[in-house]
Image (cartoon, rainbow, N blue to C red; front, side):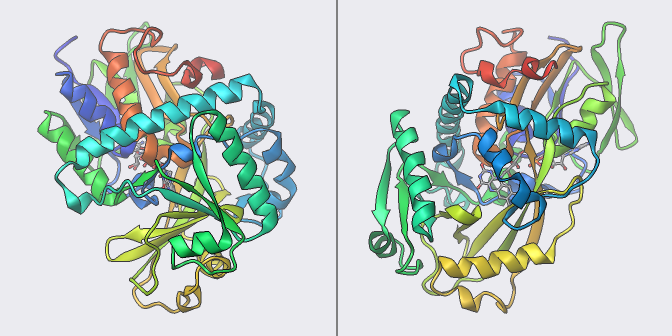
Length: 423
Ligand SMILES: Cc1cc2nc3c(=O)[nH]c(=O)nc-3n(C[C@H](O)[C@H](O)[C@H](O)COP(=O)(O)OP(=O)(O)OC[C@H]3O[C@@H](n4cnc5c(N)ncnc54)[C@H](O)[C@@H]3O)c2cc1C
């Protein structure tokens, strides 16, 4: 490889992991991040759940059946109606994604990658209690019998893939997690899931990448590329500076679509906005990371307090905090948590919003780009980007280490190939 660096664009879980594993392979690597500090974007604001149990891609006809209520904004997943050709293409491709053998192969790929990531995070966190890496499992909780029927069916499908969930009735769930109301309908406990303090994990990834020889440049938004006659990227233009490069990794989360545009490519990523609100500790506070199934919300321990997360809003590139979402998260937690009434006026509650990079088929896009021979894309991790960051980074490093197109790569998953979107 040449002496010029590989430039990784984006300092989220995917970009920093890419830098870490590239640097560990003795590749010269520079990360450029548009924010002036780490922890500005989705990965650090996530719930920090590391969830092999969430390997079922969020795509297919079932999503489309829910579309009317999404457009009307009735649930915690919404689509802002607008005449955006990219959104229309996204919706059509989501409807086609289906639940056939391809979707099952995608699910297996996500499961494998999630498990691999969990072990890579465990290595990162070894001897560092401040990162709060916990293999304490995760509970999916349902408030209604109808929700529980759907969750049981999901558990049955995952059991067939070798992922065992313990089905609990309401009383058993409340006995295991005293923060739950005792009238919840039931839960599934996934023993092999883990969690981590996401903001500290991002800083730890950056430090590990730097210790391995990478540089991380903050406040450097990428605005253009210079390319050679054969399409390779030769210079990355970032924050007023020009960085010559041997290769480039597009790992800018939901911002990757705009980067693709600079290369003349349509990367089919839509931002799916989510919110969190951090609350100080209260008793009984959740001890086990939880997901409230019917409402696509989460509540889990974080530092001295708890983090509530929720919502998936396809509103375009609009990062503003939507107070109605925050209010809905606080209100809907009442169906699950005993002390939720006390949330509303909790002093020191901190709201936040961030964008998940979502793809039509619910699978990441990781691999070489046909149109730019030295460029690798690594995005589209949707609801699983914190979980999957390390595995994605490891695959990016392998793609650069001479394995070529990715086929024959030891860990890379063909279901994630950019070629499925003509890229
Ligand atoms: C509320 C919420 C809760 C979540 N909880 C979980 C969870 O528990 N577990 C899980 O696995 N996932 C979770 N996710 C999803 C996860 O956060 C995302 O999938 C993940 O952050 C994607 O990682 P990334 O590195 O691809 O992108 P990001 O984290 O978005 O990072 C991309 C980086 O690229 C930078 N960038 C963008 N454009 C440019 C540019 N032009 N130039 C330079 N830099 C640029 C951005 O500033 C950003 O720092 C959650 C998401 C939300 C919103």
